[in-house]
Image (cartoon, rainbow, N blue to C red; front, side, top):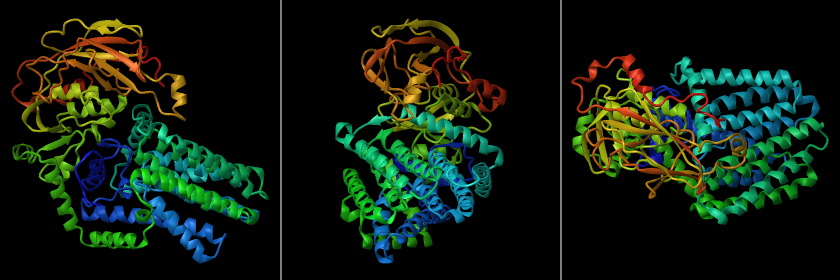
Amino acid sequence: MLAAPGIDPSWAVGLSLAVARGLVFGRQVVFTYGPLGLFAVPVAVTPGTLLLGVAGAAAMQLALVTLVLRALRRQCPLLIAALLTLVCVSIISAVDLPALDDIAFGLVAFALSQPDARMPRATRTLALAGGALAGLSLLVIFSDGIGVAAIVAAGLLGGTSRPRHLALGAISFVVTITLAWLALGQPLGALPDYVVNGLSIVQGYVDAMGQNLLGVTGEWQLAAVIVSAAAFAAAAWFSLADAPLRRRNALAGSVLLVHYFIAREMFVRYTAGHAAVMALLLAVPLLIPWRRGQRVTGFAMATGLAAASMAVLGVYGYAVGVVVDPSGREKSFAFDIKTVISPQNAIALGTANIRDGDAVPAAIVGRLTNHCVSVDTEISVIFAYPQWRWCPIGAMQSYVAYTTRLDNLDAAAYANARSGPDRVLRQVNSTIDERNPIWDSPAAMLSLLCHFKEIYAAGQWQALARIPDRCGEPRPLATLHSDSLDVVQFPAPPRRAVLVAQVYGLQLHHRERLETLFARAAERTIVVNGAATWRVPPDTVTDGLILDVPAYADYAAPFSFNLATNSIEAEVNGIPVPITVKLWSVPIRRGYPASPSSQRPASAHRAATKRPAVSADDRHGRA
């Protein structure tokens, strides 16, 4: 709940800060989480956003408790049902994600378990409540919105009057997301941008962010999820033995969908934190409408899943006594209530923590005061220094710009002197997964180099100021090819120009695109000069990787862009692959024009697209 420095705490701070400052999601702020993302990570940024975030988190928790308790109340006495609900929700709450898929499955299970006479009303309720939940979920976490919509749709397919209720669910979804969007102060015209860029975030995440840090020691968790999916889908199917086949299939399908979306969250980035998401599955067996003869078997299966979830949480660092600790949760709840009632101390403490942790030099603080500032990843510093105005460029943290669409969005913002930032704060090595920060968003980095000069640097921080465009039109130099055993050797870099390379051969092809529905994408890396190896997002390697920058135009070390590249080679999962490299020369002037105010919007737009053009033929192999 306290604001803190660091890449992960920063995006949580950024969500609340964006809502507080009225920024437009989908245009000015693009991220996995939407304007209701503060429900998942309430942070003491302002009293209003903290209250909204805590209220939303409490509402999601209450919805889950109500559904689980109501389902268990059918199976056992109230006291036992309450105890099981407490244990279940305690384990699920240890995960840093809202249980939106669980809530959706609870609505489906409740509706499909109704007697035939009540099915029309139950299906209508599912359409209205499920559509509303999907709409709100899409504004919390975009991927969860997709999951909730799929689970609810599967449930509606098992109900009565399917076309009518599917249409009713769609209407409920659209109305809810539209009203919530407007209530948050977001312009209606930006909603399509939020959806399109959200889809780009989801696709890029699967393509670029996959990794496995648990290795063979985590294989049992995959087996546990597969067994859980098969066992509980079959159990759900048999639990509705007296119902029509369509209804039984819908409930079993909903179980599989919950497992699928939770498994996606677990295994794309397979780390201890993501593996802990397995705990979200625990609600599934408790929400299944078990028949009398199935209850013992069902609860035994739920106990096994609970034990597996606790084992995973143990890897994440949570002991049993920490997870299931009513007294500790009571104290935490009391602290949260106190913070919401009187948030100023928490806000002040978070500000102090960030200032101490990030240690931005006073000289940089002064140079950014009263300016419109963009930060690459460390959004927390914007909160800690309210005398700066925040002008995000699109992707809220630079490593998230892992598709060409998002890369171009950032590039256009850097180039736009009218609405873009006039100061940029950069931090050394502000990236993840052994990636090169200069290649995280290639088109945006070229746009940054063309439109900003260094005004101060100290320690890990660099401050840049806007200048008129100092770059000319890109000129093609050469097209180089290699087979899987060759290294691409480069000619001498052009004089008074930036050397930029488009790399083809690392993009996901159709077969791998289908495989990523159930597996992570292969890791792409580029080796420079036979020594430095960097992981690269496959979608942006054709956007123009900066390889060489003239000394007079470059930033000072350690913030320099020049890689002094003589050769590159590409690998997929450590295996060399053939590539085609198109080299471009981007002229860059010495010195800077006199006044940044002379730049016009039309010039800014050209600068935003001042990157090697990619034709339809060049984009072969892209899904």
